[in-house]
Amino acid sequence: MRLCIAEPLAARPAVLDEIRRLDPSLTWSVWSGDRWTDEGGATLGPQMLVAWKLPDGWTALPDRTAAVFCFGAGHDQLTDDPRLPRDLPVMRLIDPGQTQQICDYVLAAVFERLLGPIGLSAGKGGGRHWPEAMIPRMARRDLRVTVLGLGATGSVVAGQVAALGFSVRGWSRRMRVVPGCEVLAGETTLFDAAADADVLVNLLPGADELGGVLSAPIFGRLANGSHLVHLGRGLHLVEADLRSALDAGRPAFAWLDVFAREPLPPEHWFWRDPRIHVTPHTAGLPTAEDAARSIVAAAHALRDGTPLPGRIR
Image (cartoon, rainbow, N blue to C red):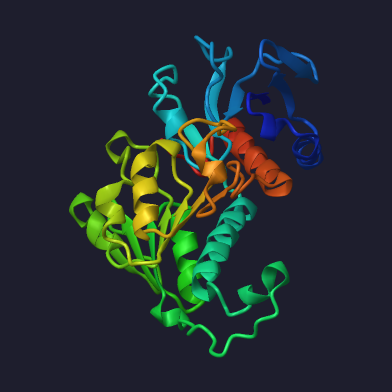
């Protein structure tokens, strides 16, 4: 079994070293942008393509590609690509470490909304004023968190937030069961899911019908002073609507990790707005150990003809 690695994060030395430790018999080629660089010599057997998306300029997959391993969160950017044969098996990365990073990112935003200004900001900038009365604090059970998208990652995020005592509502296109959470399903309930949310977390996939979902209609349903946590797809967000919504305080702050254009241009207004926290698509990164373990398990299943772990189609 040979791996054809077309994703730079999967070609990191830490990942490759862990793959080699787990199974020294596996060999690989790495796509360098214009050609393949080989490790371990050629093979006549089947190959598994490891990629988050197909590189620009490709007109065909590598010879003898028997399956594709989607390296990263989300898979629509790969499975919706017309260059990928519809009958080719696709597996997703199973990386608990990456999922936990995303959970931690969301929890940081949730606690930021919960704590808000806690009466200490008067000491910033050299001030020595001790406030007469502290700003009231909200109980966790009273903070309403809505998670849009209850897939493999979203369901874990919603469950962890609920386990900490927050009031969590989730939305999915199909009904899901997430312990401790209220779940709404179907397109007609999307706006209801966002109603009065203090924190709106977007973990939706990149389906065409969800383009522009983060726009004025849904922002208008949020609670005053709410926060937006945008971790889905860049095209979900209508940027002009966000600017107007920030002015209105619904949401009052936004955590943005994905963008319509990446890298985000230096002149973009997001960088300059103090109501926006920008992170460069790093809310969750594949971990070397879990990623290597997932790749090796997928390669072994493909080689042995056993059920493919994390199969998407």
